[in-house]
Length: 102
Image (tube, rainbow, N blue to C red; front, side, top):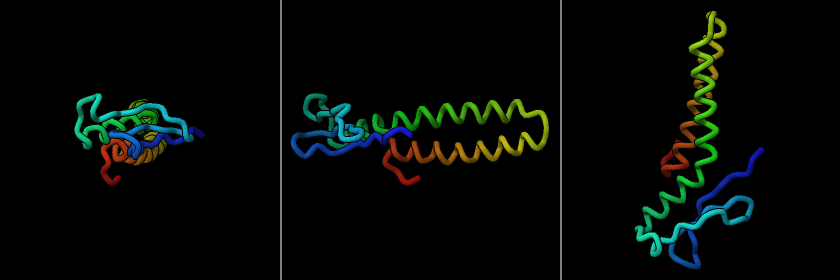
């Protein structure tokens, strides 16, 4: 299982950073990038959500493809059930990127 990327407010300087397992992966500095605090936070959240969004998009592609190719009713229902699960995963990833509730 992969580790979770997190957007964290940098208390030592202006901006945010993205970390995973205690390792800083990226920094969004408000002053250097000429961003507002809100823009810096939004950018850090999007970076932190990127791995989950990519995985969810890949799963959605598979689910939609399976639903399209399903040749019988049972397979179509199974694909629909999987598609609903993928929608939940996509919703959670989008909420993480936007800061909204899933």
